[in-house]
Image 1 (cartoon, rainbow, N blue to C red):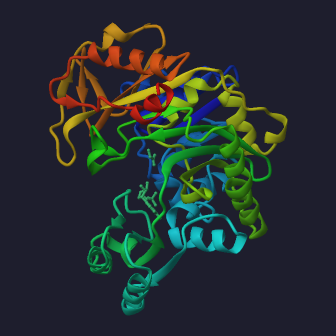
Image 2 (cartoon, helix red, strand yellow; image 1 turned 180 degrees about the horizontal axis):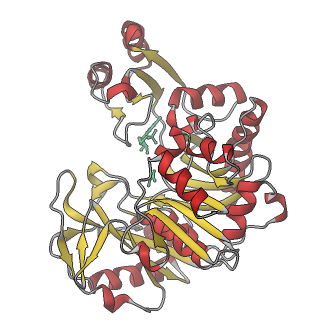
Image 3 (cartoon, protein in one colour; image 1 turned 180 degrees about the vertical axis):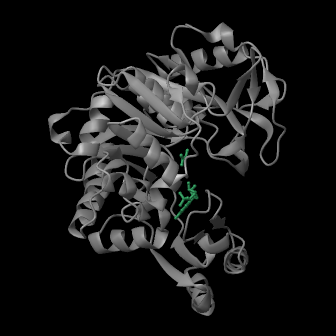
Length: 427
Ligand code: AMP
Ligand code: GLY
């Protein structure tokens, strides 16, 4: 059978790597992929948001399954288009993808179903006065979010009421484009953040691992927010009991609630949680795997990801178990200096060949080009170096000693990935 992965980053490399290892699939395609992914899949130059091109590719190559990495093609309706031509896909339809595409939609679902989350209200630009009044009533700290997809930049955790007003003016003034014409203002939640992954065919819901990522660019969780500078799995903060509670109170009710509305959710569901003194509360749903969380969750999976993905896409997940090994995984993101701002392209990365076949080390490429025998950096987040080990410490040491073997003066990475869990383990 043949599987097509949509996307071009480190997450998609991990997906291709896991699917290449599946006995079910003898061919893995990736659109558009990158030159690092090309070692595990056949990369085809069709952009991840070119729905016509993707549907055409899937038909021409008689693909049996499409696995969608990023949210944008899901929100645009790629899965609806594939369903219309009878090609199974792992990912929700556009209507169900509103779980990520619209914060207001998700809040409403949570309130209706009693899913624990921050109290919140949504306001349009015409309701600016009411929004200010709500902020005054609740006081700071308070959180102001653009309603739509704003590439992770639409959230302001305001320390003061004035700061919240500024965030409101910026959103209504068009700072986040259309995504900010409606805002959600919500209560500030205190606690540790953790991510819970699940996979579902719309009926059966299976947990698919836990992780914590590091969103800030620099050590000590300082600097600007990024897509994620590293991650580890499992996370001790979200132990088995808490993960079960979050599955039962947050993830499963959401999938059932959507089904009751006539929206069948098939795919991976990523719950961003705040572990508060009152238990796990939902910060946000994402309708896809995390990046770089997939790079630590998938390598720990003992079950065949190909079988799980196909069962979720076609229905029948109840027949398939999801089992993890005892290993820990930790990934370090290597980024171009300047990211998440502007950065040069085409700088050379040396030493990658030293990591080939190294025990307990996997390298996932997020944005590289292979040209004339040289590896070049072509994006912001460029490489993920994942270490695996019997303990988080061992996974950490393997990842970092591999990173040290890479020679890339124009790159940077955090040196403290996993610090929170390592400190917890070792005290
Ligand atoms: P979101 O994109 O909604 O996950 O928000 C991005 C980040 O903002 C989260 O990862 C949290 O660090 C923070 N955040 C969002 N909502 C809240 C909240 N209600 N209370 C505290 N922090 C929040
Ligand atoms: N690493 C965070 C995300 O994928 O949304």
